[in-house]
Amino acid sequence: MKNILILFIIFFSIESILANEINLFTTRHYESDIQLYKKFEEKTGIRVNVISGKSKPLEKRILEEDRECIGDIFFLADAGRLVSAEQKGIFQKINSEILENSIPKHFRNKYWFGLTKRARIIFYNPKLIKEDEIENLNYEDLAKKNWKGKIAIRQANNVYNQSLVSSLIETNGKKHTQNWLKGIVRNFSRNPQGNDRAQILAVAAGEAEIAIANTYYYALMLSGKKGPEQKKAAERVKPFFPNQNNRGAHMNISGAGILRFAPNKDNAIKFLEFLVSPTSQLHLSNNTFEYPMIENIEVNDLIKKIGIDFKQHNSIDVSTYGKWQKTSFKLMKEAGWN
Ligand SMILES: [Fe+2]
Image (cartoon, rainbow, N blue to C red; front, side):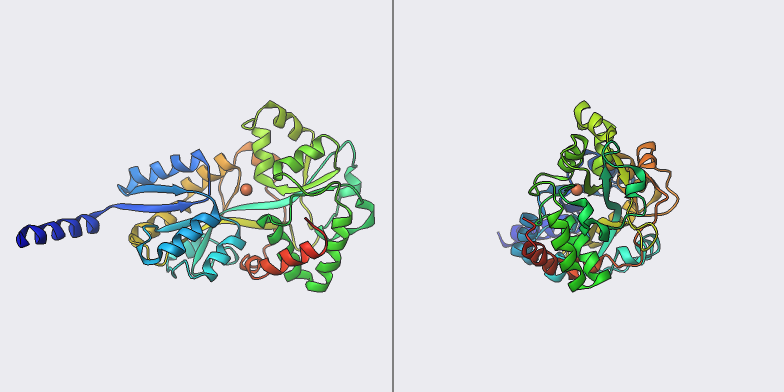
């Protein structure tokens, strides 16, 4: 009996040592991501088990399961969320020359790595706003009186907005941003509601003159993947990149880190390195319409149409979005941003 037990233990230990897999916790909900993971499986023989969900429940599970957690990687949208997970001790430090050489410094740290980029910009209705009214516009200008009742944006609890406000705090200071918030809230066309696409739809319908949204949502609408109505609506709206005469448009990332107790750490590193390869970057960008993290990727026509030669706010480290996240939310609420 004892011998059988020992054999049993040996068998399962070998089995776990040989397990050629990774367990990926992800908040990204793209079918195209799954196709990319299949390519990784074919190339390396490492199986990718996907555990998808929303960021808070997944984070809670990782924290509660602690050492027992089977997760190797946590893939999230928004630098604010990555920093918040980092601060809870979820990730382990990773050294990878490939990741360090591929990803610009301000889009990563030792704990997490930006894998795609997105810009949070302005969308306007050219029937309601002339090009010369909007040219040279900065995020800062959105607090000015001439925009009263014209701006559509989603709620304060949205992390993309918190990151945008955080970038303003980091750049202009807290006091300046408090005043800016008072101004922009006065300029809202309605009580913030809906997702990013809903803001673009409001502009298309003339219910607002400008909206703030992430670039890939607009491309998604233009692509027709969200139906003919949204395609038509997006065609009535134009993108505008703010702050082109100074620091550049607000950039954010989707990125991932390796969990502290990852059972398959080496495989997990290989997986992240695979995601920054040119073929993966092309796949990600062509399917989700995010901007590639690495240079010299020939993006598709839709992304080109939105714009690729704009000035990006590259002088800021995106981890500052996490640093100011709670302050941003507090100031937004205080200013009456629901
Ligand atoms: Fe999103």
